Image 1 (tube, rainbow, N blue to C red):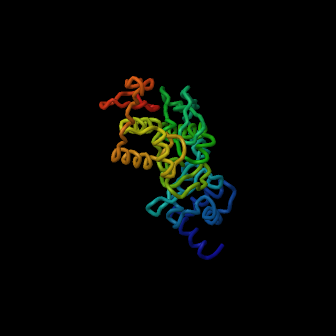
Image 2 (image 1 turned 180 degrees about the vertical axis):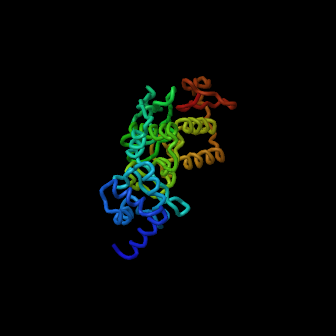
Image 3 (image 1 turned 90 degrees about the vertical axis):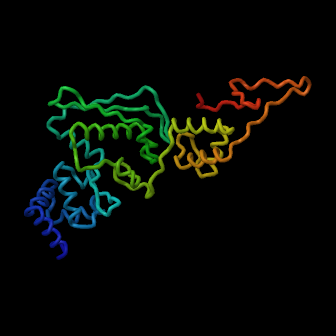
Length: 301
């Protein structure tokens, strides 16, 4: 170990009241305490830029008995230049199962299956029910797929499992009051992570409009004289091709503003060339004030 590393290790030990912190972490995993610091800087805590940040991460890992070497906990840089301790699903399950009052959990899910963005069909919502030995009533946390879905490979390939993970984390936070730790889903607001802590994208993923937002957009399109095909074609020119409810909010906003700025006059009804009578409007059409009609779009009331 280099002189600099020795000084760093000594500084951490001193700030924690002797070598107790590094010794506890090292002894727990059969490692030389003097090598713990260097090993963590090359693995789970490689995002840490100072001794103080390493100390903060080690304190949380030690408090919850989380193993940084199996990525139950790892460091993630925040926007302020610091780091936050991210706990993976394995870490959440560890601290929950180790809690002396934990008395099991169960799941309830919606019968209706939906697709959000590029996800697989999954329950519209899911609940995690956690039982504690010292409480008469269980803790119930419900998460809606439309609200928590992220456009990442894990969410698109294993949608139901990711929704279940999200439920577990939120229910555990409520039931046991775990503080000082962040789950991967919260970290995704700054960068896309999977549950192993692997960076998938360096950009913030745009929020999608969802079913309700797409229904509202189609209703507005109808009022402005445009069809659903017009909406999707315009989205494609803006760089998005996919299901309407997976459209980024920014793209939908641009389409909405464009339709309002340039409403399209509906096609006038055609007259029978022999009788001069106006032909019947298509089934379900809505007649306008000038005698023209529009065919309702999918999603209109």
